[in-house]
Structure formats: structure tokens, C-alpha cells
Length: 243
Image (cartoon, rainbow, N blue to C red; front, side, top):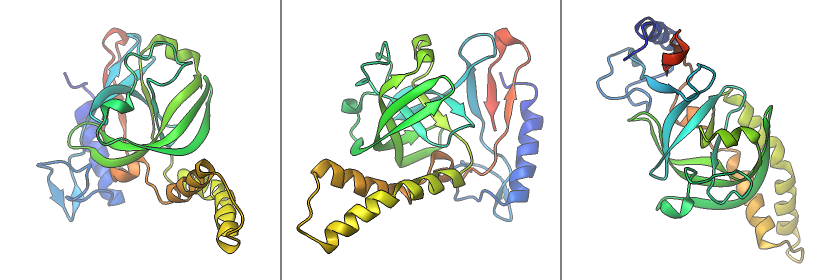
């Protein structure tokens, strides 16, 4: 059942999107059969949230990565997609985690990074794959971080396999530009002096860092500029929606 507040919430979201001019009929987030006026989508899509702990404290959404269905937590404090890998040796039971060997569209890269959360840290490698949320929200080639090591005790609850960052879209580009300064200098130095050498892994990671500067987050690829959340009041029946 749709939460009682969802219809009112959807109307509010439509008004907000209309004022922003955020979506048009060609937008991936517009969907089929969406009424438009002046190119603005009037009926934003609903993305179901599942109350994973039964007490209204944790909500997850279904998504697929490389054709594999997993559950992810929406995080407004970050902006990137982190997917926990079956290769992770410090993540506990990885049976439900993403397995890149089962994807025909997976593209692994050399660049690695660390993300810090209030509940712990993750260590990941850059990757690309096909990502889908509520149909027709599909991204053919989405960059994400494949988590291969983690100090994140909350994983023991086995309630999610991904973190979906939905924070400010300007932040990732500023971060990636700052992180690309070193790789830029390295590649320029090698170009100016071919006698200088660097290992293949370092060269590939440097190229990855430069490519990431122009890469889009999940929200950017879906052309989503605004969203609202609706949750049920009763904890025992506290599923919800993102509109």
C-alpha cells in the first residue's frame, strides 16, 4: 500500500520540480506516461523504501548492479555509490554482496580510495557497471566504488549491500578536481620527460582520477535535482517512499 501521505507528497514534489524546471520528458526520471507542461514532469516517480529493521530506524531501497539485485541505504551525507563486494574479506557474510564475476557489463579500474562514515571506514576500487533503481531509472554505465575492505560493524546486521549517496551534486566534482592535481602533475612530467617512469598501476590510477573529474553521480545521471521522503507513522509497518 502507498503511505497515506504519498499523494500529498507527490503533489508537493511536482510543484517543487516545476519551479526548478528540473525534469523534462526526455529525463530518465520522467518515466513513461508522465504528463508534462512546458517540458516539466508533473508526476515524479515513487521509489519504495523498505523498513529493514522493523522499527522505523533503517530504510533500504532495491537496486540492481550488473543485473544483480541488492539493497542500498540512501545517505544524504555522501554523494557517491558504494557497493559492497563479495571479494571483501573483512565484511562478514558476503553471500548477498555484489559479485563482479557474475556481471557481463562490469568494468574494473585501478584507482582506490577510502570513505569515512560515522559508523566506520570503507576501502574501495573504482568500477563501472549498469545500475537500475525503480524502472525505468536505469544508467548504462555508472561509476561506483567497489568496497573490498571495511571496518564497518553495522555490516554484521546484513540488511544492506550498498550505500547510495544522494548529497549535494557539486561536492563530488570539487573533490575529484582536488584529487586530480597529483595525477595531472605526474602525467605531465612523464609527457615532458619520457625517460621518467611509473608503474602501470600508478599510471592507470592517475588516468582514472582524471576521468573521474567529469563522471556523474547517480542523481546527476538520473537528472534528479529534488526529492522528498514519506514514511509511515507505525514502526511495525513503517515502509515509505522517495518521491
